[in-house]
Structure formats: C-alpha cells, structure tokens
Length: 116
Length: 113
Image: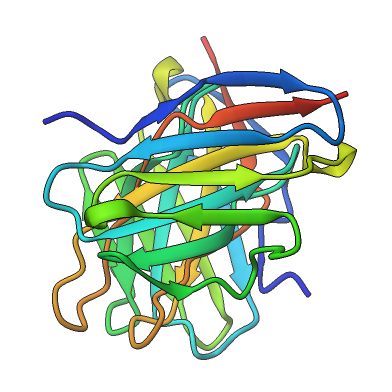
C-alpha cells in the first residue's frame, strides 16, 4: 500500500514569494491533515479536512495561508506571501475516520521550506 | 500553553537494555494517546496507541503505560536495538469531536552498540 505522498520534498524561496505544497493521501482515507513542524518541536495542526470540507482551520493563519482539497482526495497548501518565520517542515497526514472511533494518522515525508 | 510535554530532549541507552520515554499531559479531556517515531528526513511513523480505558498496551518490544491520575504515559522498548535510534513523539487527543492530535516536543533516543 502506498503511503502519503508529498511534493516537493524541499523548497527554498525568498521572502514575499508564494509557495505551494501538494499532498496525495493514502487511498481510501477520508480525512486529511496539514501540520507545521518547527525545529525542535512537535507537529502542530494547521487544517483538517473531512472529505472536501475543512472542519478545523482554527490554527491556519488565514491572512497568508490557504488550502484546498479538490474532490476529497489530493490537497494543496499555499503561502502567499511567505515570511521568514514560515521556515519549517510542512507535513501532510491522512486517516480513515469511521464513526466516533479515534483514528490513526499516517504521515507523509514532509516538505522542508526555507525562506531567505 | 504546552498541553503535552516530553521533558527529556534526549536519551542514550545501551543496546539490549530497556529504553523508557516519558510524556506528561495537562488536559484531562485527552482520552487517546499515541507514540510516533521519526527518522531524519522522514515523516512521523505510528508506533503504538492506548485508550484511556486501559493502563497498558503491548506490541512486541513496545509497551505503553498510562497513569491517568498522574496524567503521565511512558513508552518502554525492550530490548533496545540500534534501529530504534530516532526521535519519539508523544501525542494526545480527545476521541470525540475534532480528534485533533496534540504533540509533545519529542525525545531523541540513541541506542549505543
């Protein structure tokens, strides 16, 4: 079974430039997450999708960050414009949520963003 | 406010001995806990989980213990192997509702031959 796929793996941009990350979740998983992991910290949730619907985007900085999940499968996360503090690893995860059972989230390899 | 804390940034253990990684949480609403393992340049990999209705869950060399009254959980790895060298993250969630995972800062485990 293929895991969560993310691209690109690495991205270096100058501040004020736009950047986009792409995620393909595990086949059949209905829930998709974007996390940001700063150096020396654990991942922090940015947004959670159930199918096409963003059900929790409370931690997404909406002035510069946007996300979409077309047809409830692939997802993109965009930053425009990027700031120096956005340098981090952006992780995508997916899970199969059934009823109220707690889900196990499976992570992709992440995209390491460096903003100069 | 750090709701999940891993107070040891690093741990070094001899191969074959027991590794014990600790995690504390503050939110009493958390009722499901997970451990993830992360190698460099890879995403976190699910290792083991435990529901608050249990106090122990075992999977091969890995055992997670939960002490609800102390709001503390630990991961035991025995015997430790060189391939266990990685960063280990503790995570917690409320199983009802948003199922938002809250992660600790991670502990870097090094297994010495």
